[in-house]
Length: 388
Image (tube, rainbow, N blue to C red; front, side, top):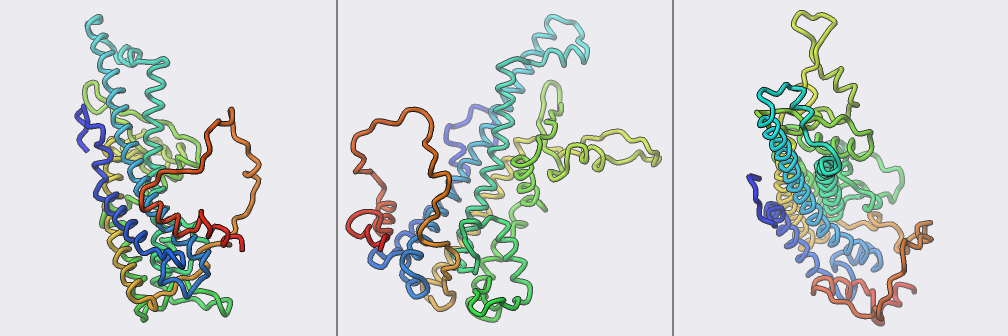
């Protein structure tokens, strides 16, 4: 995305609109397939009880909508990162221009000392860092949510789809190319159907669509996921700004996100040509030599393209299964018990003063969500059926 500033306030949404509209269309098709009388999707009616059917169907519809929300949030974070990076560069340029006016030939040390510091600069830097992390978080969230949708749409034998993430798809893709393992229990559901069956071929076509390589440079998805995981679970490595031309800086990401900071400095560095024991640090080996803004834009574009492709594949798979329910049987194993477990979180009272509200017995909803709740029997006379 060209951010020559100023930018339109909805640029972040417009960039990913092809994907979010595709997801919205698929969600609408799923919602239209709900059976108001029996609950859930009608062609699942012979493979699970109505409570499990309702919960799993509703989760699928919500996870498709959530994927669009995640992708939009990632795009917004990328735009905010670009805006804050631009502001950071502008502040440095202004400080250096002021230095040049009062000092004939500033030294490198004077230029460095003139870089803005203090509360405003520190807050701006924090926004630069946090917006990048938010972009990676939401891109990973996009794929993890999409993974659950793929598993449900494909009817794979995955236990408790609530715990699924993109690693689950990678495991299924590997399993698709292997011989089916012997089931440990007689009634155990296989992860997928045999390759020679029509249902098995349908499942494998869906998994083939989850290949990330056509949508970006080699290894882009692995690098993105490893960077997200490093930002989430590991100590923060040194943030680096590199001068790319007179008065302009670019922030860069680590080339090997799974490595620690010291590992990157030691093992990514190359020795001198004379193969002596000494070596100098060459940042071109530790870091990607592309601006962080360009990398985030590219990741958003690659993820968006893959989402569009996967939604097309899921829609085709869904229509095939709806027209021919015998191809793939939806297993109840994908959803845990219908009655939720009560955990310690139920004891949390919240913070602050309790809100004072009028009677909360009416809610305004869009027609699709209203229909979804009617199918789920969350209100009215049929609510009691959940407790029978």
